[in-house]
Length: 194
Image (cartoon, rainbow, N blue to C red; front, top):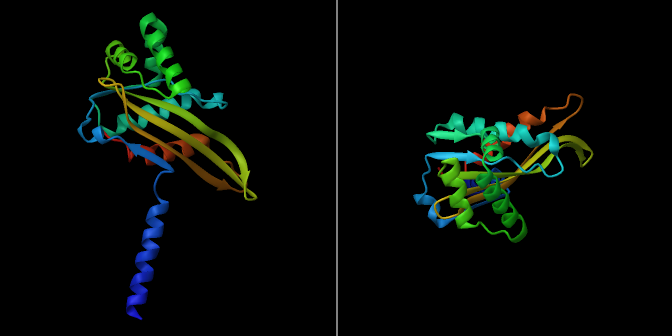
């Protein structure tokens, strides 16, 4: 009888533990030796959720800066200004993102050019998958979803990529999507190499 209880408890713990991870997280083998000092956050791709664009950039930068992992975090707003004021950087970022979107290729030469021009060792790409209030299984929910890619500029390699979403149900008072996004970001960054 005692063995059955122990087996049940261990099984329940394993099930609960497996539910706590990200929907998707992939780490390259080189990530163990990757320790950037300066990281830049390229302006997020909000998809069809334009209202999330600047908010996500702020949340990502705030969380990363608060962790103290890097000597400097170049926020999305600062990167936007650098891109707007530097024709070479604007061209490199545009070409890099187009290659990533069309053929899922991280171009090493363009990544290095972005790193050299923005003076960062790595940069983060963010894609907004969800940013809305909706209904799921007859429940009203606030839903935020992100996909992130961390790029090593010295090799142009995707060191880490992850995707996850956070859902909060509600009855009357809508939760703020920024609060849901902050919880999601914390959960995702807990698995990011640094």
